[in-house]
Length: 192
Image: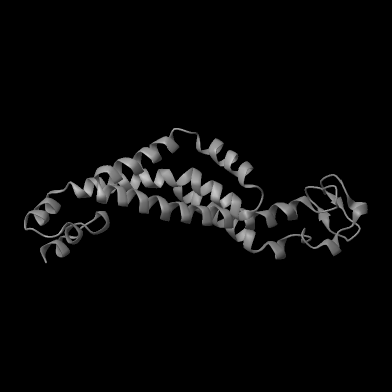
């Protein structure tokens, strides 16, 4: 199933990259729009000679072209929001697991509070509050998703912090920062 999903994702990305080559028109090029071709049914052959496989909208834009060109923005927003949410969540979760104490309690209670709300509802509310735009949508998605990454990173950092070699490194006594840099400790670094 994973291989099939990767193949489908690869085809979608290839479709988005090759949009100018495989679509009958650029939906963002206002000069190429023909208003007499507005609201035509699927399979309509337009005055420009192109077959509109999914029909046209109220401005005469080809719907297939609009979908394929829209993939580009969707992929950009998804990748950027995912990368920022991963970086923010992993940093907060690892910091909480590394520092411990009140800092850990504060960070993890805020994350638990956020996880108590449905992510899609939170993203929709934030998108409505922040307004329209690509960056506002990315901010809403990051805010809705970073908590999952933070919870996972916190679990990994806490598990690593409680391992025997970390306790042995701390009993030498190595400083806490040297024994456990950012939630992990490689055995070579702990022996120094």
